[in-house]
Amino acid sequence: MSGEYVLKRDIIYDHNERMLNIRKYYPYFKLSEMSFRQYKEGQFENLDMGYILMAVLRFFIEKNNFNEELVTYDEYEKFMSDIMIRDFEVKEEEKKCKELIRFIFDKINNDGRPFVYEYFNPVEKKRQSMRVKLIDAKIIDGIIYYSITSDAVEFYLDTKEVRDESNITIEQVLLGKLISSKNFKGGTRVVRRINSEVGRLLAKKNEVLAVLSHDVFQGVKVYEEFNNTVVKWFDDEQKLFSQNKELIEQALKKAESESRYYSAMQDIYMLESELNKAITRHGRLLSECTDLQIKADELIAKAKLTSLRISFDFRDYFRRLKDLDRADMIENIIVPMLNLNVPKKFDIINIDDMLLYRTEGEEKVEKIKDEQLKEYVYEDEIEDKRIEHNYGIFLGVLLDMMMKKERFTLSEVEEELRKRIGYKFEKNADWYSFLVHLCQKKEYEINALSEHPDTFLEEKIKNYCKEVQKYQGLKFYIESTTEVINRPDIASISDIIFVVGNGDTDG
Image (cartoon, helix red, strand yellow):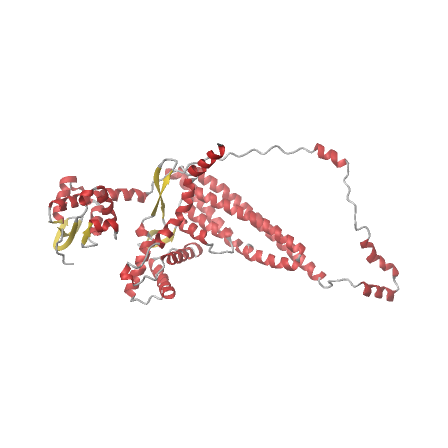
């Protein structure tokens, strides 16, 4: 029965953690499924989105983490142009190639929104969602700069490390990303991996010294390899340790002054404690490597001297003794061979010492608390819910009018909105973004977009019409006019005409 209980517990209570580990792979497989056959009538169907994604992530890691630079869109465009020409032999016009590169960037960036990965939570018995973002953006002096997220770095490192020479350097790059994204628990796990790596290198140092003591020629090769993969990166690692310690100190200052950081205070202190241990162990590793270098130099120098005579010629030695008439010098080669089998004895007095030896107290088992992950609500989630709510109101009014009239204008739609919700929509930015998305296409067919939504708004219409079945089968067109709707101090928008059914459009 106990085995069955453990099995059920492992399946149910470890599921969330497994999903956390899986989620960073979700964007790759989501994007790699994408085919270019539907884009520009299949002109670029030989492109591989999986390869392009990995190339772009490597480009961002090089710029953001190794060169400590933010990336502009022009830099990304130049990099992608080289990829298209070199790897896929794309020889299209400059305008078409720029459109293709912009299309790929929007897909990787997911139009500025995170990828949402849904899964079933067996503890709470309901579906939950996790969010993964590959690229972040921020505006500095009116220019948009892009940087790779910690999830994207962790995903890329899981596939293959960027530099095989230093796992500590790579883990610290990831640590900096996690601290910046306020994932202090994840940072603690990374520092513990760094400690394990330092422990492995300390053991490796002892192995190198053992090989040097046994076989100098083989030991020199192992020692040189150890130097190239460990000692070479000490300066970079020390620099990254200082940067990450400074990031933690900044987080602690914010935690003392800002209430939203205060809840993470314990996690920050835990991370700081682990990082201090890592810095201490790393300093010890540096000292051990210096000691190894001194001992290696001594062993190599000694080996050079002894290698001058690799064997002893007894006949030559006896001949020289005969010439010198020094029979007493035979002792030099006979005495070392005597008493080779030295008997080893155990002094009976040591038994008393052993019996009186006091053993250390039994080690106390550390109890690990089963901490449940807290669910946070992100700012863009709040915005998505607001947009979903407001777009639902606008769509409801618009589609209701289409069920009653075959032809009407945007002015009439706004008049209906005033009746239902008042004048407040005129100052709502979501209303104008709704119109911008709506006018991207001239024709909408509810049944068709329910299967293959092409735009952001079509996805919203699809979700709305799933809940309200009466709009299924509806088809409408959008015609432009020269009339302008003026609102002093707010906005000026062009009036448009909505035509329901098989109406004629002017394209």
